[in-house]
Length: 66
Image (cartoon, rainbow, N blue to C red; front, side):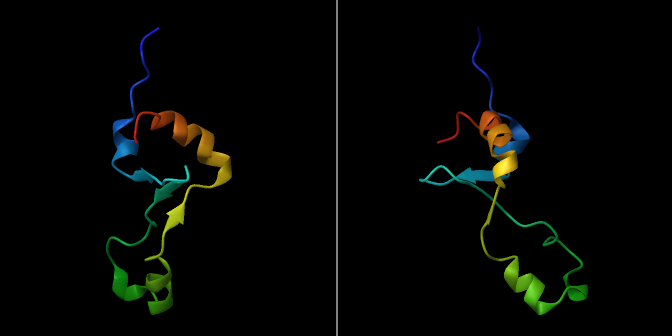
């Protein structure tokens, strides 16, 4: 059985923490920021983690990432 390859799109968007959590950036931060409130923009600076429901699927895609 061949090894499972890491999903290229996923490895560009996520990082694995030392504790095993999967860290991602927030959406809605790329452009059109003048329409968004300061509080929204500030909240989106903080770390965002993958939800428990999606964790198994994402871990399978990035199994090889350290």
